[in-house]
Image (tube, rainbow, N blue to C red):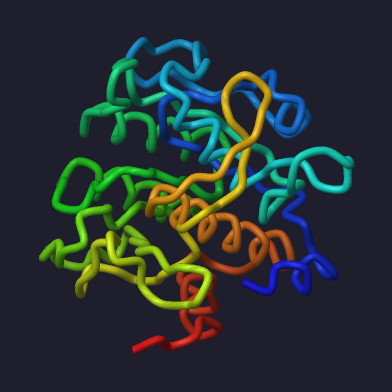
Length: 244
């Protein structure tokens, strides 16, 4: 991803990334300084602790603190992380369209520039409408293509940036979903990140390709806050390597 080159210019300061997931362990020593108050989209309060562990892993890929001699560093390690808990299911981490949609609108109204949903939300009219609301307020919505190894067959949305996964050898991961609805691909195999409880671990899935991409968008936004979502999206696509 050539992130160290980008860090010579920006580390994401001044941008807020909303993480739509199972909550985030906001006390993790490698995340705590970058956390801001978020929203529980089901309970309509600020209870955003991680009930499943997935969201803390996603948050680390975005904004794990850099230059602090512990763990690793997120792609945009000076962003603010806004946890939006959309799941109340501690056994699977699943979420509803309504929670994702209401959460997107809350994030849009509360300063989020980037929203990452590590869920397959393609095909949901309510989520697409909420993503359009975010886009109209200057924000961008990113989501995972899925880990099914098949063509998802969805219609491409102008309001969702859908991301598939690549490996360390720059090929599509065998388990990554793909298709004309996918906008970009990013690393998704063996990603080292924060885990609930204060530790670290390696994870794989399009759940991590999507936030890595949202974090790159945050770097672009931080470098030039005047850029529109359409301009940032075009920069992401123009600077990507065409893998065929």
